[in-house]
Image (cartoon, rainbow, N blue to C red; front, side):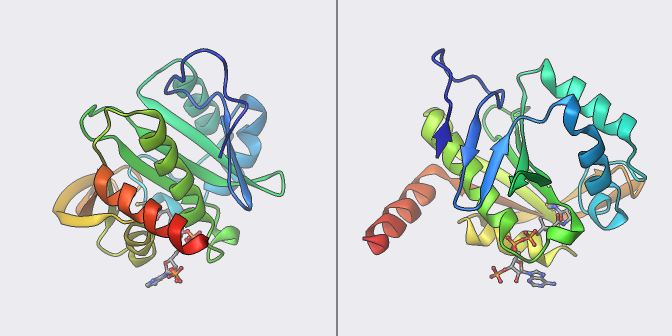
Length: 197
Ligand SMILES: CC(C)(COP(=O)(O)OP(=O)(O)OC[C@H]1O[C@@H](n2cnc3c(N)ncnc32)[C@H](O)[C@@H]1OP(=O)(O)O)[C@@H](O)C(=O)NCCC(=O)NCCS
């Protein structure tokens, strides 16, 4: 659910809040630097995400927040549960034809369905608010079954394997690639709304 939507046309910046049953997704600010660094500073996260360095210091979080503050090609949300940060989710719009979904959670928060819940909220936001978007893409290292499962639960379909560079690994590694077509998302939404009644 989109909350506090500004009156001007929605931009791709996350200057509003998405709410789910258990989570709030909002734009990260410099006040979140310590919490983000504490959550992200774990090799188990860095080795599964392309751009997270390891170790991850407060300075890395500060740079990240300053970078995303001024740009349009990345929409980033801090995921909060009971008002405490638990991870991040976002969309990289670098390829306009195939915006890419990404996410990570602090290790203490794994296994509670948070990533799936946050991913679904962002997927709904993109397809609801940007009618020209026909598909989303995402990916997961072939050794990351949890992320693969999240994408499948959200309706993504496997499209193949590509090599991608991971900063914390210092090398490239095989990744499963997935896409979610708008019509698949719409069918799943219709089915879930019908079964909820
Ligand atoms: C991947 C990650 C986001 C999962 O977060 P999470 O909140 O625990 O995920 P969810 O609970 O929403 O869903 C995980 C699903 O994977 C399943 N799963 C977890 N570990 C698994 C494993 N080893 N093998 C198979 N399935 C697994 C869970 O059972 C769950 O599926 P279910 O709901 O059908 O039971 C989290 O582990 C993380 O941040 N990892 C490091 C960063 C990362 O991998 N980011 C994604 C980059 S593509």
